[in-house]
Image 1 (cartoon, one colour):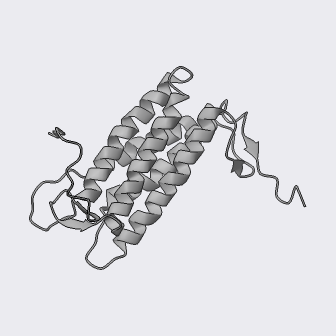
Image 2 (image 1 turned 60 degrees about the vertical axis):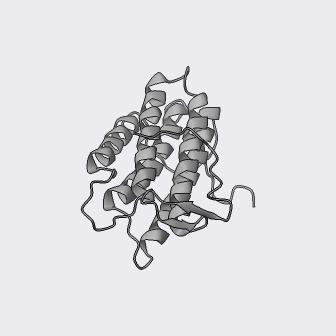
Length: 191
């Protein structure tokens, strides 16, 4: 259980922060950057939800579940595997599968794309596109972290962040009147 009685601790004033394991690292360490961008993705999803609460309760509920999962992902990333066998909160394959099922359900109601979609349309769709691009940055940072010697990122965590950006794209089309309000890219249109 998390207890936050005091918000400021002064322990980070010198530019370090604690991982979930208690180890202190620089605030710009790759692991901090990765889960910091996961947190930023979560905030962008929260902003998108403002536009959905009344317009599409089903998508809003799905994004609410995802926001909770994003804290699981942050917890997964902030406590590196110490090889000590202690149980840790990790993203699961079941969470990845749920994203896949939700993508498939939304996508089944959309017409196939014949071009790339320009970010925009409704305010909710535009906000979901912003969340998608932040999510892609989180994925790049997780890949960079996993490529470092002595660092690892769980396979389900990598799958989850990859599927999430796909889900945010499909959700943006879904809330854009099932894709009818999408604006498609026209290559070379303004030459």
